[in-house]
Image 1: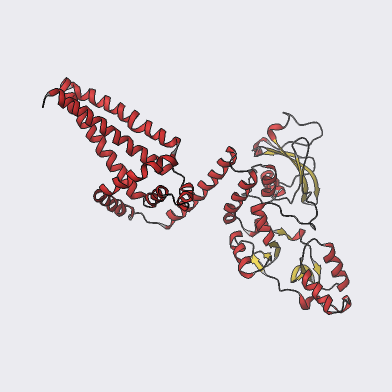
Image 2 (image 1 turned 30 degrees about the horizontal axis):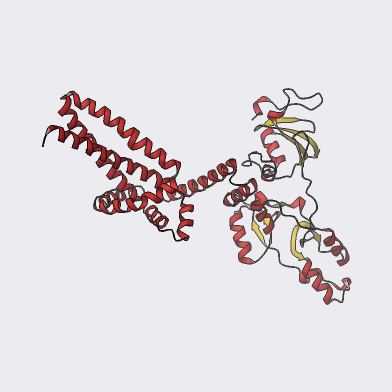
Length: 443
């Protein structure tokens, strides 16, 4: 064999090895970046290549092991052959030349270019390389099995349930990030994004966060005359009304309008003969620390739609309904008997007048804002928490990028607040607008 032929064969072998290295990098990038949802959809349509991709992704350690092993082998072999060629042509100095040239070729043509191509169209590329990767995995199976054994033994050194919990949290955050990105890109509407985010948030919420506070509950007195009770129920927009006795916090039953109507019919429509407590439902009490997701499951299990929320001392704090939980997912649900919700009143200048009892989550959802709700549930609670005092009407505070102006107050309760993004505010407040918050409290 002549020297020229040996050089040609070495160059050809290096070229083939660089192509194989590019194939491994292309396959790894495409398979890891491919949309699993898209692959499952294609598999359901009897796409055999998509089914093969799903099988490869179902055993990622085999795929990664084959890719890393194959890529390492071809890169090392290409570098060795290039070194031999450099020695043939330039002597000892050829080692440096060969190393520099092979490094550049591997980085550009075997790594960056294939990975960039795969990222541009990961699904289509994954479908194309899947059959070849299947063959490669089978050929390298003995070596990859040995690698998997070593890796599994090393992973057994750090087993922990905390790791599983961290993985669950990471998966939820990844889903949340995907939803937010899809909303920004316009592929998912704002309403759909809010619903998907609401489902993820259920696990983080307690019934205390979304319940109807006791001060806003509509109730009837068990000691009132039947006519008065019926009149109160007719004025209410709800079909289930708590019944109290002796004091408003002592809930002794739940009155359902359908049961009330049936009992009235049995009494020949003579309401004076009604004994309200005889057909009232027993109240169901749940702790205020109950998770919303668990409460939803309990509603479905018990086939109930209302529960009274109590604190650690057994005192009634409010009530929660199945509708309250569903509204955390789909937003406000209204029917023909609901009164208009004027608790959040957008203004022409971009500000919003809100009742102090408005939930921060509701305000964020309606206005697409990002007020924090970690330390407080309501807008009034947020102002008090940040100001570290109960402010007076006319005072203004700026924190978390928003300006809060106290409009009304009843005793120690803030009843109305004006909220506006701070960046749209003038540099100085108009005269008579109240005192600004201390800069130390500004967010």
